Length: 282
Image (cartoon, rainbow, N blue to C red):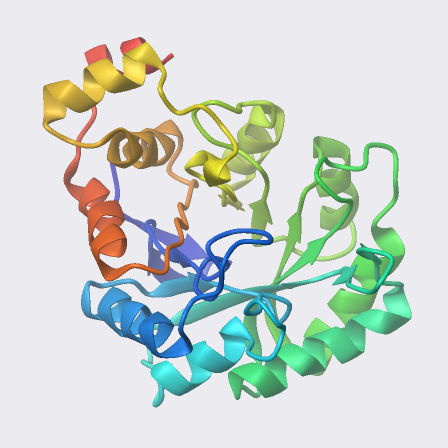
């Protein structure tokens, strides 16, 4: 199993990266976390070889005053030359709850990410659509065309899409190259296997969000516990190793606000699952 992936054909990154959603909050509506401690987690991640961080301008602390992007910019300045930062646009948050940005609203979102990250160009920008599930039958063409135009301007290096089905992927690829797809997927939720298969065939990165269930799924599968015991590992470490074993295009981005948890997650790199293990996890 190769440990690296060439994102968009030109950015070589480790297949085990870091997700920034939990840097400043333990979860949606959960207690906030200290930005200083979050910065320590980021610096330790880079020390341990993380070269792919997934973030968003709307990832914020409890009162909304601090953005994960700002913490990333300040903690990792000067930015390491090999560090790839992926972000996402699409959701608009207001008093009535989140809604989808219009095509015209995407430029300000991209510019907000550029400013908060302190960058002239974003490595990878996902268009996030829908809410908790892919909005089947809903076109993303107009919005993706708007991002493709920003890519032509030089504000974005690579484009991605998130929370999509196979039809959305085909629709987007007819407009501009898609470097990555980010969908809800983990050991206990394999509903998006068709999208994973399409990405594998096309050499497009498939990046599960909530790769460990996001605290919302039962990860106590007997097969998972059995394999973890066989390797002297935690269930979460095996769940990450399983994702990486599925396909050479899968990238995992577990997130945390704890250095100890970060180190535990990254230790999954050393777990080589056998055919027996994969059968137990099937």
